Length: 278
Image (cartoon, rainbow, N blue to C red):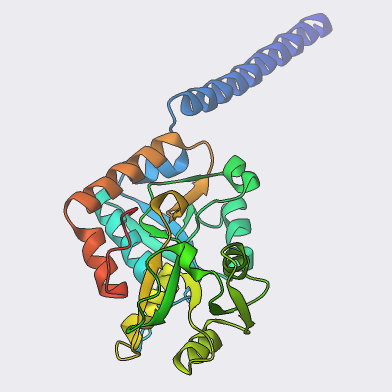
C-alpha cells in the first residue's frame, strides 16, 4: 500500500513538473513570437486604437505651454495631437521637467517625448529612435531691417555681435571672426542691437521667429540662415527598437506634410514654415 502511495506521489510530482515546464515554455514562446512580430505593447495599443502617453514640459512656449485658459498647447503638442488623429489613437500628455524627460522615457512612464528633441549626441542616438522631424532649426543672424551688410556669412568678420560667451552661437560668431559683445541671454542681446550697441545677434531660428511673431514692429529681421546641411531636425522620440511604431509615426508625419497640416501649424505658431529642411 505504501509502495502504491509512493508511486502515485512520484507520478504526480512528475506530472506537475511537466506542466510547469510546459507553462514556462509556452510563455517563452509567446514572448519570442511577440518580439519576432514586433508586437510591442505600444504597437498593440496603436493597432487597437488605444492611448499613447507622451512626455512634454508644458512650460516651453511656443513648443509646449498652457494658454490663458489653462489648456496645454504649443507646436509640439498640436503636432502630436495631429499624429494621434492619423493613427486613430488617443493621446495623454504627461508633463515633466526637461531634466527628467528622457529618464521618464527610460522608465516607461511615457511612450515617447514631444519636446524639441533632435538627438545630436552619439549616446542618445545609440539609445533612442526619432520619427521623421516635424521642425527644423539652425543658426540665424538677426539685425536691423535697414541694414544691407549681410549678403554672406563671411561678411560678419569685424562686426559686433551680442552673444553669450558660453553658447554655441558665441562660438559660431568667433569662427566668423565677429567681435563679441558679451550678454546674459537673447533678450539682452536684442536690446543691444536695437540700441546700436551691437550690429547683430545670432541665435536659434525658432527662438528668433517666435520673437518676431510676438514683436512684429521691432524693426529687426533675419538676414542670414544656416544652410540646410547645418539644420537640426526635431521629432517624436522613443526607446530604440520599436521599428514598427517608428514606421507608423513616419507614415502619419508624411500624411501631415502632404495635407498641409504641418505647414499650417508652423505658420500658426511661428509665422513661417519650420517643418521643412531648407
